[in-house]
Amino acid sequence: MNNGSVAELSQVTKRFGTITALDGLSLQVQPGELLTILGPNGAGKTTAISLLLGLQQPNSGSALLFGKSPLCVEARREIGVMMQEVGLAPELRLREHIDLVGSYYPAPLTPAEVVEFTHTASLADRPYGKLSAGQKRQVQFALAICGRPKLLFLDEPTVGLDVQAREMIWEAVRALINQGCSIVLTTHYLEEAEALADRVAVLAKGRLIASGTVSEMRALVVRTRISCLTALAAEQVMVWPGVGSAHRDRDRLHITTSNPETVVRQLLAADDDLQELEVRRAGLSDVFTELTQEAA
Amino acid sequence: MTDSSLAVRGNLPCSARMPGSRLFRAYLTEAKYECLRSLRMPGFAAPFLVLPFALYLFFGVVLFGSSKEPNTALYIFLAFAVFGVMGPGMFGFGVFVATEREQSLITLKRALPAPPAANLLAKMLMATLFAVLVMITMIGAALFIAHLRLTFAQFLSQAVINVLGSLPFCALGLFIGTRASGKSAPAFVNLMYLPMIYLSGFFFPLPHSIHWIQFASPAFYLDQLALSAVGLPASGTPLSNAAVLVAVTLLFGALAVRRLARVG
Image (tube, rainbow over all chains, first blue to last red):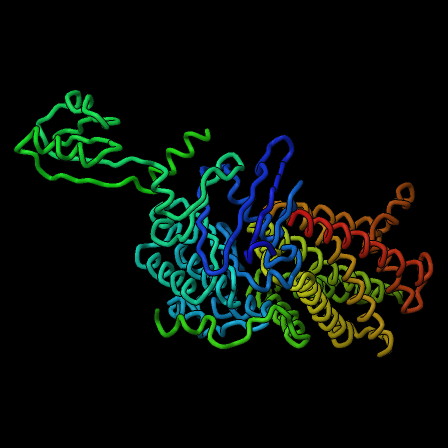
């Protein structure tokens, strides 16, 4: 294991026929961190996770789990997995599924502990096939944590969940992190990454194009959005120093700038009747859009 | 953090080493839930348990029960016993494995630390259990309804041969399950199952011109073993027939396991 990481991809290349899914990708997951992997469709996120789970083998480079090959069952006894699309046996109940998956681990949680932790007690005795899509995701999350994993892979964990169920999963994820569990999260919900992630890795075309904390990633895009109700014309504002773009949407003027303090002063000086001023730093979605557009 | 969240790690050891007793329990748990799943699907279980029994009663008792030919009743019993044990293995493995592959359940189990052979052994146990149930009902019908005159040892030998003889059909079903989709698997299994029964020649004698084709049907060899066990004339020796069945099991089992390990 290098640098004490719990999972590591080192200079990994994976090809499917003529398509290169991963191109010399290196990625490490440190103990106790939540790493979010972002990227547009086809960026190689799922392939990267598949290599770490031992579901596929790299053409070159190496994948390690706890310093061992992911094919080693001892290494996989330290992990929990929630896949994006999986159909569990519809005839079995949640309590039975937990008993079954827990039997794969040396010291699993009991079904009672799992349903309490994941707030799924009401689903415990219902056949999986009778559950809604959101409830099935909750069950899959419960199964992912039942082996007391040191490293948890969550692939789009909150797709199809209502707000309450999503909050419950977020709460459980934060609790797991507090207890020292490492988590690899892939998600299309950027607000989920902003809410949970210690570190973000952005993939595009099988390569790592940026990696860092959410704050570090935001700093990559030196841009702030300003909007307000004003009579000023967009064309008038466009020529001010530091203004990247300006456009009007009905009564609101939207400005993108790398120098928000100066622009705000100018706005207030130019229009005494200016109202509802909003200033917002670039979010992860702005960073994601900019980075992936550059890589395309 | 809630109190319940503390339970995730607690003070319990998180060693990745698995004691032998827990490993054994993992195999048992997988087998238990495989059987439970089958029993909770009456649409799957009932035909395999009822059909051979009902067909045997119809042909062996109602249609040919009063046949002057002394061995007719015995031939019919042997044929339907073989027919009965083929289905659970072929359909159980073929359809279940194909469906689990399609729904990524097998992929999930490969990612989880499931013991490598647990899923397949559980399905094999389930198919064997069904074969035992089929043989119990068939022997019960032969004894108490058809009044077939066989010794206890002969009935027992039929049960052992057919229960063990279900394994090649498990391997064939597994092979289909690793290749077909969940929706097409029943059709592919039927495509193999029904011609195999017909071509084995144990229900209808094949025309002499295509007599050789029966050697291509694994069911033929199981039927020959069953015939030998009750002293009726059979093609080949018990050893050669058993060897073919073992070879079919190993060949198709190995091809399927290899594909499951590589592709899922």
